Structure formats: structure tokens, C-alpha cells
Image (cartoon, rainbow, N blue to C red; front, side):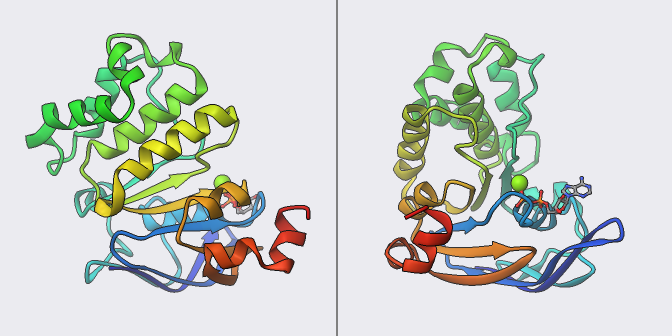
Length: 233
Ligand SMILES: Nc1ncnc2c1ncn2[C@@H]1O[C@H](COP(=O)(O)OP(=O)(O)O)[C@@H](O)[C@H]1O
Ligand SMILES: [Mg+2]
């Protein structure tokens, strides 16, 4: 369903990804692990058309994505929850969600999609008229996820879900995502390796712009090298 082959990505003159490859099956939850600066966000930017890879392929449902514009990629069914959430702070919660349905794909089911987001995150329903800038960090993350869901994605990318959030809120957001079941394929970027492995079926490890390992999440949690390198055990 989703496949990346041999991807080289540059930021200016600096290469940030080297021959990256990965595969995600429909309905799967796959984590991308790696420390700060490893290239995770650059990978998300390449998938969503914000950075154009210099080499390699990104294939989604048999379509080649390299060279497409971000809106075309959204239209094909891929949505990104960016690192740092980036909600429109001057707009209300509801307006933020409406913006997410701006692509053709999301528009016909706007009302239904808003209700679905409010079902997933009830606090957003209670605060629908409130300015997004008045929300807590956790609520802004819920809104950023809600906004991404408004384009009715088949593949949802979430960059740094838990960064800066209290454990209780993080747990609530992961529970909401779990309730979506296998209806949406999820690629989850996390610096918190333990959280990522607990909430994914498989994971890829990115170090200095390269995929250095991958495996089944429950096995990686028990891997002595992973535990030493990432879990401090
Ligand atoms: N906007 C940018 N301009 C130039 N270099 C960047 C930019 N964003 C990130 N980088 C560099 O690209 C590399 C990969 O960063 P990034 O993809 O943000 O990693 P991660 O998301 O894993 O922390 C790092 O060396 C980082 O310093
Ligand atoms: Mg990042």
C-alpha cells in the first residue's frame, strides 16, 4: 500500500536522508524511531511533498508521489500532523477543522467528519467556538489530529505525538487513535521509544539519516541493544 525505496533527501546542500526504504501494509501502525536530528521530520516532509527527494521512490496505492504538490498528495489520501501541531491559533476550533476539509476529498462529508472528530475528542466539541490559541498543548494536539482527519486520509502521519505533553493527555490521545482501529494506516514518529513501540505493530529505526533497523514492536521492546540505546535499561 505504501512503500519508500532508496530515498535521498537534501536540505539545501546537506544530505539528510540516505537510501531510506520502508514498507507499510494497509491498516498497519508503524513507528519511526530515532533521536533528535535523525531525519524523521525530513522523511515526513518528503512523503507529503514539502521536500523534493533527489533520488528514490515513494509509492502509495500504486501512485508515484515524488514530484507531486502537497495538495495533490493530500487529495490522494495522506495527511500529516506536523511536529509542533501548527494549529491556526487565531481561528476557532471548528474553523481549524473546516480548514482540514479544504481538499476536495474532505468537503462532501464536512459535517459528518466534524462530528466524528468531536466523538473522538469530546473536549474539542465543548470548545468548538473557542480560539485554538486558548487550548492547552494536549488539546492543540487533538485539534491537529482532528484537522488531519478532516481530509479523510487513508494514511495518517503523526510527527512527535507526545512531545511536550503530560503522560495522561498522551495516553488519552493514543487511546483515541486506537479506537480508529485498522480503518486508517498510521505512521507514527516518536522520540519516546517506549511509547512508540507500545502503540505500533512494527517500527523502523532511523539514525543519522539512515534506516539502521526494523522489526516487530513487541520484539524490539525486548531487544537488549534497543533497550540499551533507547530505553536506558
Ligand atoms: N529547515 C531546515 N533547514 C536546514 N536543515 C534542517 C532543517 N530542518 C532540519 N534540518 C537538519 O536536517 C537534519 C534532520 O532533521 P530532522 O528531519 O528535523 O530530524 P528529526 O525530525 O529526526 O529530529 C538535522 O541535521 C537538522 O539539523
Ligand atoms: Mg522532527
